[in-house]
Length: 296
Image (cartoon, rainbow, N blue to C red; front, side, top):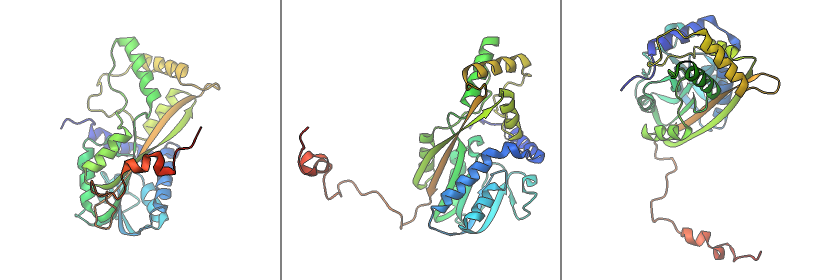
């Protein structure tokens, strides 16, 4: 399978961003971790062991701990320096789940699945690590994320050079994510989207935050040529013209796709077999079935 992302470059940028520790740029992870805690609050189960998989920051593990839904929590990261505050964490190659089969009850992944080359393969590994009736909760950037930046850079580069290199990562649609969960063998899959609009003074302030998140261009097919300052200046002008509010500040869209799925278990609800219904759909939908048709 052809790689979409340069994994080594991606990890180096994430590590650099972590070491710089720009707290203001971590707003998206902080918000997502808060959402995770809220979603766990609706789960009636308690799990003996949970895993926070490649979440980069300790926020996910902390959210699980605050929820009180797990007896123990293990963090898994691709670089030991990301686990500096957690000596019990596990270091594993990117896109590899280093856990025994059926060894955890809860698996969580926050804001990194959209930068994985083999998402279906990783989901299968997560499902295998979960015990029967185990829960997976994940959040990833989805379609529409940074659409304003994408359009501004594309238009500017097309104007200046007649073509455009890929500069913003591709993002999955929520319908595709639901299908991926099913393909990976999860039962009761659910996927939904939450949108956050963040306002900045200029495009360069947005790009500064993306750099502090380690979220700059790491596409395998990115252009290796240095990008001219003129291109960014023109893109900033387009951004300001097309995506600014009356007060002059620009908008940046972040769409988060939340996904959940359970490993199959006999106690879970199952759809009825075809032909097993006691009442026909025609009877339910007919006016007579509702007590007769009323006049206008």
